[in-house]
Image (cartoon, rainbow, N blue to C red; front, top):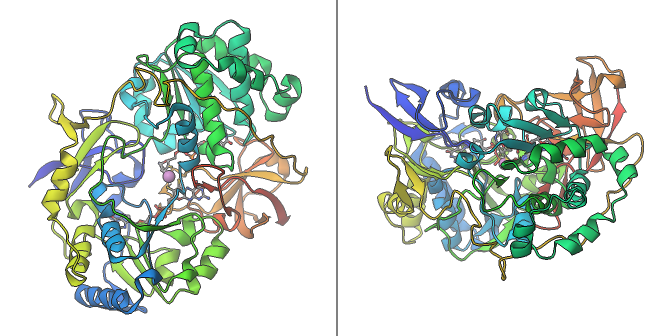
Length: 580
Ligand SMILES: Nc1nc2c(c(=O)[nH]1)N[C@H]1C(S)=C(S)[C@@H](COP(=O)(O)OP(=O)(O)OC[C@H]3O[C@@H](n4cnc5c(=O)[nH]c(N)nc54)[C@H](O)[C@@H]3O)O[C@H]1N2
Ligand SMILES: Nc1nc2c(c(=O)[nH]1)N[C@H]1C(S)=C(S)[C@@H](COP(=O)(O)OP(=O)(O)OC[C@H]3O[C@@H](n4cnc5c(=O)[nH]c(N)nc54)[C@H](O)[C@@H]3O)O[C@H]1N2
Ligand SMILES: [Mo]
């Protein structure tokens, strides 16, 4: 029986190397995968997938499905066609279809449902988005998990942080918060105040890294003035942080190797870019850049150091508020917009008005149910691909492991369409080789992206003069009514967004007096949803939690963009409990 190394295709920090052995998926023991896999991959082959193509609910052959697709695309004006791609499979060859649609003259999407606001804030300050990789986090003394839930979303970091001081800044008492030396159970959407105050106290305590500031952040004095605009006592009371917490954070961090490991939690807001930039500024005050074992890790750019052969001139619309009804034919790949885009009612209305919805994916969901033409994809075990990660520097080759009659690969679908519409396309091997050329071989035979540095910014930031650019102003938090609650929608342990086992509940602190199993209606200015209650005292009493992937969660969310980064703002809306 064949056994060979491939990599997990999922949209996740860890991007694990996997061995396919005797029809089983096993962790690749060398490297960060460390001998264990996550629940999704452990049960990967047990999840029901779409086996047959269908049109208007009737099963058809793949040949018929491709003909139908060709017919739909040929009969439309090219300006009436939209290609919408999500992140169901994160490997690099997935983009080949986008190349076809762009060349055809159709519209494709940009913007972000994920990390866009935070990434924009990082670029504002540093001039580029270069990440601190896992291998450097491993060398730190102190790890601050800021809006990141590693047990759920990046469990392979856990073996690397044993014996370190751990600080957690999260409105939920997550597993890592329970284990931490310090948990700051901050009120949602108030992180910018904490970050500003931390930088201010670094200065007051005479703990600035003067040498670093002089060279790379000479505007710090002006930033300090901005931080002075925050009223200490009233702000701390409001955000659920004490002066003692601030003292403890500084005591743990000063003169230590500190990794601030950020997730997407604190940037799912309109001003998400500023939040991230203020966290960067705290790191700058301590001189955490350009030193071993120090830095800010975020959900980095998985394409850092790589250029895509599929990038070509195209018309773009945002994937946050896509007006599907402005198109006749919408081709949806690796995505479940009816579940995962914000403002579901708006998405539903718009999709219902489009003439043809094509769904190209692995699993049934809200979107596949609404689709006219359903084309099953091949799984990552059934096609060749290659991937990079947004938290480590590996370049991972994903050789096909099994032959299967089911589905079609993205390359084969694009190859068929390119041939029919007379668009030039290179061979699959040429594209794979293109990506492979960005790698260098490690001693153990694995590859890394050559143009990525383990310690970025060693010669200053990528701004014009090499200096960090500080925030000059920020938006004060809006006051809201007593009966309104903060809605947070983090990731679930049992699903990957809407893939695998999706959660069904709303989580609330028991002080509200609801019973487990009782249904309640939750309403925001965008809509409402009825869900079953689970009491959960890991939450603050001003916060409701509904996991990403829960049916109906995005009835509550807004399709406005973040101020910067063209990103969704899933946690901007406040909610009320309207019926119980
Ligand atoms: N099991 C699993 N793993 C996943 C995913 C999944 O769906 N399931 N999704 C993948 C994807 S697409 C992504 S983008 C990553 C994201 O992975 P993470 O960055 O870890 O994302 P979240 O779970 O959304 O949020 C992390 C933490 O932020 C906290 N948080 C929420 N609001 C705030 C706030 O205002 N301030 C602060 N300080 N914290 C806040 C939440 O309570 C949560 O514990 O995970 C990837 N990995
Ligand atoms: N309320 C709320 N909403 C959120 C979030 C949140 O935190 N809160 N998180 C947001 C974030 S961070 C993200 S990244 C998005 C994710 O949202 P989406 O990109 O829509 O991701 P999924 O829900 O994982 O759905 C991906 C689909 O991809 C398909 N798929 C899987 N593998 C393949 C493949 O190899 N080929 C093809 N063709 N299809 C495949 C599967 O059928 C699956 O249904 O959701 C966003 N939505
Ligand atoms: Mo994401």
